[in-house]
Image (cartoon, rainbow, N blue to C red; front, top):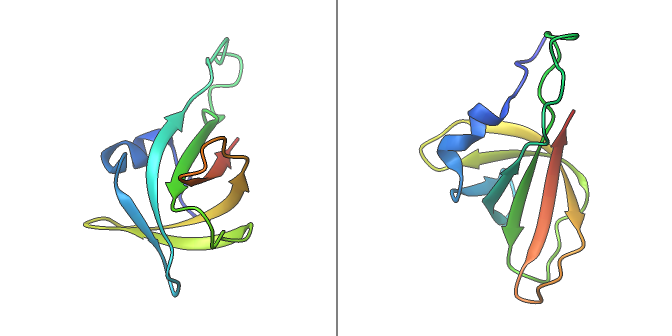
Length: 99
């Protein structure tokens, strides 16, 4: 069984550059979004849902899929990335959702 990731795993790497293993893409961890927790006492064993938002240069969009990303001075993470609608023309955003 693999480790259950939480927002705390990524906080040290916010604004850090993640490189796609075996590829040329580099993504910056721009945000860690955590929705309000509400009443979680009824189910204390569930992970807090969260979303990682990465940004990268525009063009050359990374296809949706499972990737191993390694952050400088950090460990590798296996994440399912989805390119998302990005209102700014100067970057492409991606998300990894944990629920």
